[in-house]
Length: 297
Image (cartoon, rainbow, N blue to C red):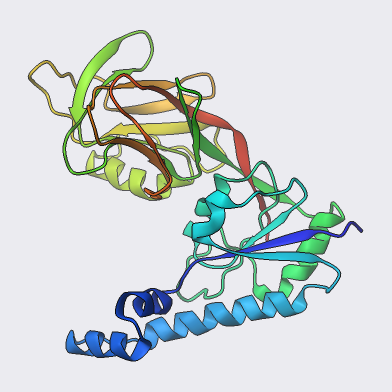
């Protein structure tokens, strides 16, 4: 068996975030008590996550290489082709990792099934080593989920597992030209969402529900993505003909920015890892070649 490198990925718990915000845990508890709130549930989730991490770390054979990353370090880390990625946390953590991978297997660990649905984190901490051994010995099954990409005319590229957002960094209207097919139209809206089948259970689903479920949203393994223009404004030279639809692998939504400043494109809600989308910049958005390789439970 090859000596693998296991990359464990976590993100700060609510308790850890509160300590950063208030300085100490006791101060955080004092502030929450003054608001009529407690920290018992947060502390329980914190302990369960720490317990799951400790279980995995203790079970990894000493001969295996290991790296532990915080979510904020992902954009600075260089993944190796033979890495096995082990996110430990909520489902959203897998989406945070996915955009940085190139087909490496992902073993998502759910540290707290009572708190997290476990759609993408389907494994238990105590069985992770056996699962990794199955991966290394080519005995594991995989689920390959479709991803979304945005390619820019300056050579930049952005990947996302759930959805890509294109719009203004604030609540101002986003202005751009949009092409779906052969025609162009100018739009002013609250931005555009392009979602995969995985993302279709979240933000895109909410938008589609408000519109009366007019678009048949793709399933997670479908090689299609759905797009939604949010709150398109009809008037003053702007059109609202193309405000939603499906794109297959051969189709792209082409968007040309008309925002002097504040235009952005980011994926999976991570605004800090964004591409500036200034006036004249063009992006082609559609189905990515890459897929998330989730190790099946």
